[in-house]
Length: 500
View (cartoon, rainbow, N blue to C red):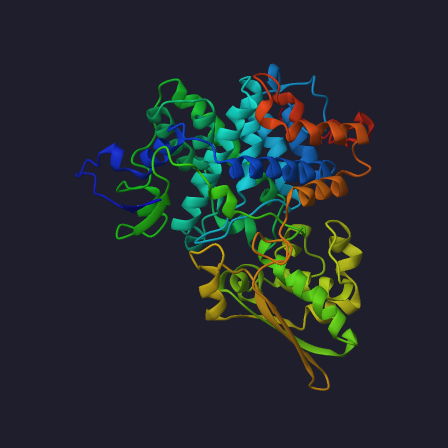
């Protein structure tokens, strides 16, 4: 790996494009490096993972709305949409829009946390849609996804967006553009311009994940993927983009991030070096914000230790800066303590999540978020007794550069009314790659079977799992087989009159 230093330059200094971050990202996207075998297998795992959560969310309101929008943009020889017949095709950017929304809706796919946050699986829907429309092979798709993960993960390691209240999809736009460029075998110049254009158009604020969190949280990455597709299309036609988008005097860094005195360090593989960043990412066992995963495991363990939950006086959670300020009481969001809040808000409230997991010794992607579950008096009592605290020890472990040492856990102390205390701590979720029981292929398949049960037929389930595990052998034009169909009568509609 090479560490690239990125800073702002005044306009009078004409920075050679080959020294710009966007060019360096484009170089590794166009280098045609040998594919790492473990990375290939992990891509297959994540396609299975994405399909699991997408199918489970097909009849949720945001996904229905996004599907209706996509259905208004049919196209011969286009891309497929999850749930619909594979014979029906749509413009790839709209297929990416609805499939991306379906993948994100339950907050249940993969994650990577470092200087910033990310869900790298968000790269897969736009790349798959473009691959289908352009009749690419399974190997082409694998190459594109591996590149996209490499770009997003390393941007997340080096550049913090959250510090400036910029939403993390600003790293997704460039990674999708780089992945598409790699998959389509575009030249470095075209990918360079695509990355710049994609970044320029995908800057938005973190209000989408603050306060009363709306359904836009599910749409946001799909929107970034759609814009990235359009950026690549535009630059393939010979058009340029704002440049240098990272280092310029009025660039993203200069005006939105750390400013003109900024210095970022971005690790990237050498040209022609195998790309392995996907292996540093991790999926979710539970449908909740990733920093809640280890805390759900802790809650399940404490459930067995505490004799009477009704005797709880208070619960203190000692954790990292990000966990405390994003999903903890440090966020100062009253909505995180409100039983009437949206599901999107509750899955970003560790106080709610911990209370439910402690009572139920379990977590379910639907049952744990119902209005009746959130309104249970015993739950509210525990919920409102919880306070989070930043512990610098946990913050340091959160930012450890060694993936084996990086921690997203916490220490929990439960104090009863009689003064007795129970404590439990955990560095990593049990399902983390370095956790007690890391997710393997069989776990991804079981997650798929669980989430799609009673939604798709057994034959369709078996067909998809067999196909995706043979991805590297799929020939040009065969990627439509990665679509999953369900009975038309099972798909809900939104027939409200709109523009499309």
